[in-house]
Image (cartoon, rainbow, N blue to C red):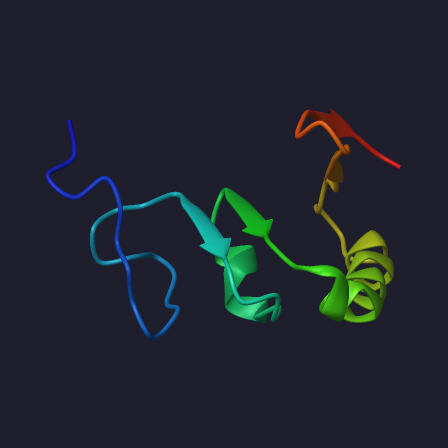
Length: 82
């Protein structure tokens, strides 16, 4: 078991110092360094939807990237989009 299952950091470097294989970008801003992790989660709100769509298109052209989109409905349930 990892001693630090979650690392909160102001910078993004892969590999992570604590051995994390997944990264969550909670501010809606994509960073290319996230591609150095096994899995990256980009969290965004309605104010960044246009940015997220542009990132989605860019990542669609990237080799070795598998994209998935999840959305929350009005009852708070999550389903894979679109």
